[in-house]
Picture 1: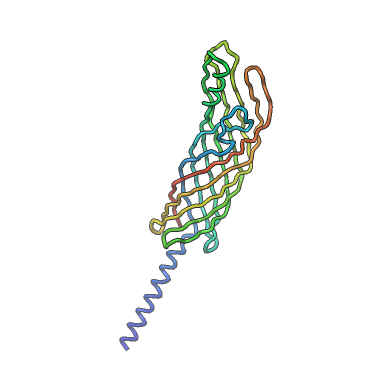
Picture 2 (picture 1 turned 30 degrees about the horizontal axis):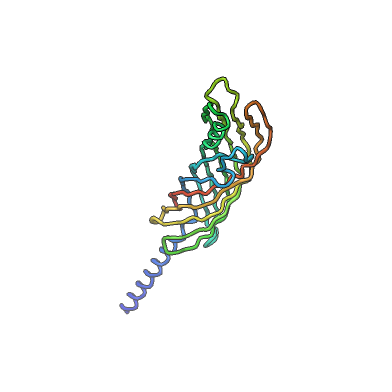
Length: 237
């Protein structure tokens, strides 16, 4: 009789513990976090040639994310990201070209920065590697807001009219993200979630470009494409 009672208590305790462990593992359907890292421009966006109408003159920049997710199935996660990316402009090649074509005149760069804001929604699929580590391929789409820089390369000789200027603009477009995220649990409520993603977008910028005394009005499409690396910390609940 005592043996039966003991067995019953042990079985009951095992069921309770198993239920609590399962609940602990499945309770975290939501997460929210922040991420910061580097962003590397690609293609036309990083091109510094004055002969390419779509050159972005962008240097390696930085990115900052506020993101969240909701696990609506065992492996599928709805994601949302607010991402800000910022890039300085690289006009060294442009300055060298102007100085070669205009001996005796030095030029300086007085350009602004690229600022890109993404509002992305998407899906991630979680692949569990171990109990605490997972890989999540992800994709997202949404609007983007771009502030393109005013690019000024001016002659230090005040009497010279040989300058390069391209006006910046504020435009909206369609953005996207594709890549993978990693997740390393740090206890019940926190996790490291580094990401490796390509982001890009399609925008058209109306611009006036002045080279010397010649003004050219045009539309250019810098095809903003970047590769982003970021470390992050998320809170699960």
